[in-house]
Length: 558
Image 1 (spheres, one colour):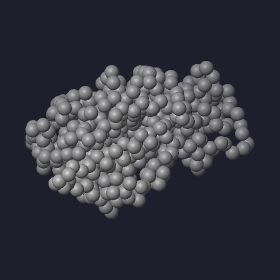
Image 2 (spheres, one colour; image 1 turned 180 degrees about the horizontal axis):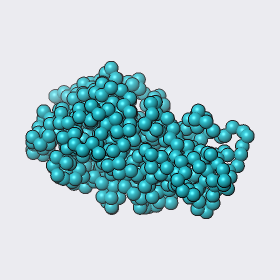
Image 3 (cartoon, helix red, strand yellow; image 1 turned 45 degrees about the horizontal axis):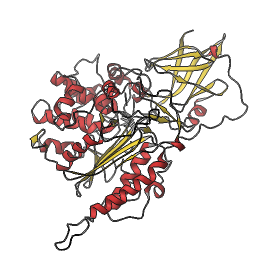
């Protein structure tokens, strides 16, 4: 099978696997980072549980705003009550309609569990917990249930750095090379960029690196951050430095690790001690281990193209922690909304960051579209700050309507379908705030089933069976990514990527092409002779070429 055929049967796997961004963690949907969930095999409750999404239990407790989806964010029509006879608060009416809408589409979403909080000013005006945090146990989601928030972690990282700017420890325009001076550790493909790259550049995705480049290293191969940092020297820039927005979790995380070196404290300790604890977010977690050790966390699930949900956690989200590892509940995310709505840098009467430096995190740094800019962990215009988080199996949306003083957080424990639900309810709230009670974003904007994975296409005849499975077993190596190890267990090919101790079962597709259902990716065994395949071609992106191509792994062991 040639590269064109291989590329043609890849369904949405551009490692942008998140598509984040992708920590995926894409800010338009629930981090792509890019992006980004990320160490080792995670022991999850109900690991062997699958569920048909049509019969999810629904217990109710009472990626990104689509700025180009056909509606405009305008000032709220809410007006202060008149003196005289008591009248219903317009916000109460909006919340009532919003609640009915949420409860109507949740059963159709296929998501195991979700939680939503809305804050007006410094008051929580809405909180709703739906479904279950674990399909096996059936335990309902609570306001204190932790969800992985993916790239919504980015704004926390930027705010934490703002604290260090406020106290004089750092400057926004510090060169990264100040604390990463050794080129044997950190070097960009363009050596001039190595010396020019600043904290501000990292936090605003304007390094010139290809969007989502190297996400595969932590998502699939369980690479250490030090190895990913070293590999930057091989990744060619897509665009000139500091000219174009391109979402990149590896570069974003670098700013967090710079702060760690400057303070002599691990990033996870720094973010908790300096920011989360002062915000009253004491139950929030900054490592995968702490998240799964919490007695009240939502098990993350991935929807496969065959319609089943499987417990799944991205291998090495810890490695890019500043870009997307936080775990938070809506009860504590409400504090984050209050803090952002107030825009004073104070919380509970304590100044935890200067207003000037907090505002800098919300100030556009690079053009995203003609009307939207990327700031530092936020997409911004004059009406809204927003971001989404996507760890492949957990998806989150955080937005603040600036003129209305209203913020919303929605979290889900299933990907990629969580982003559809988050986008729909965020769009609905925006519509209600401007007086539109009719439009149904779930249907009218096409969010329903928008990201539900399609079945992999059937092969074109002639159909050819596989060779003996032992033909394919062995270790295949690539200079950039490392190894892929193929084994056989109970007559099933198992694939181990890099240092990842979680294996994926491969399904035969045609001839010597197998499918990885977790990543919706084909793997083709080639150069077969003497009873063994000697080459493995994948659609994992090769970012050492321009444009990026497929990656080939060559046999190293029998």
